Image 1 (cartoon, rainbow, N blue to C red):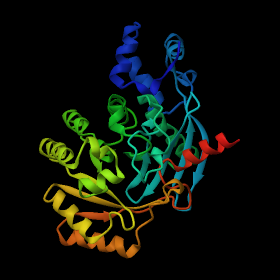
Image 2 (image 1 turned 90 degrees about the vertical axis):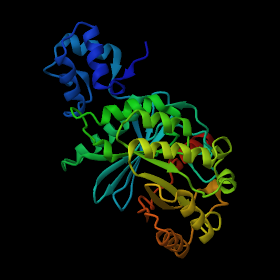
Image 3 (image 1 turned 45 degrees about the vertical axis):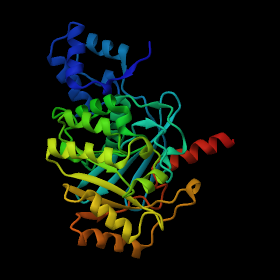
Length: 353
């Protein structure tokens, strides 16, 4: 029998599971506290849980399914982890330090099939989805890293922007969110969680209808269909007009602001006319544009980082059109900064041996 990660259960699911085996309701609270507040790494550490329950959990679940393969630390405090899964696959997770707190970027899939032509994550095709437990465990591993430093630091923010398309792993994504926002556990505020999608319109509607008060970001990267189709093949299936209808639904139902992510590629999408088209496209939506300096990827040598002057000109054009925007602060530029870059390098290195 293959054991699943205990982190894959929400509190309600854990409670129902334990009661199904004849245990009292309060056992779930005990176990949950040991997992997320005391952050134990072995079921036998649950010293106030009776032995029968401890053995039952050990027979059906595991706590640790990820192992740390590589850890890279940047001069700015960013830490990139390359984790090995139980089946030998590799994933990336990143800890970033901000003035507002500690943010973790998590991965949702092994590889990615979206196929954005500038992205390191898509260099290797998707082989499988991560379970909700494997996504939660990324947070737990980063928190264990912080606990060892004994500075009292805690993960406060989560961005679901790592390897993979989160909405292509929808059910596990939602379960993950419900686990990490639980006030009895990690207690990460829903408003401190951002999920990024390349534009799966049908899942934006579904996500909106969950009524989870988390933030949504759209990886847009181009202001028109011709350009977006050229750099993001998903636009062939879901053109901008269809995507924007889903965005409007989200804005109407949630009354929340939405973030449009826009990676600036030199002489591709960083011209003044691109900025003007972008401003016209998003118009008066409750928007926030995140302008992202490009992290070059060896395999995508056709793309280069926009010059600082072009970045500021693009920014100024949007601001003059009344668009709320910011140039994203960079993290980990002295390590493998591009998402998926470290994983890709390690897999190619292994294949060459």
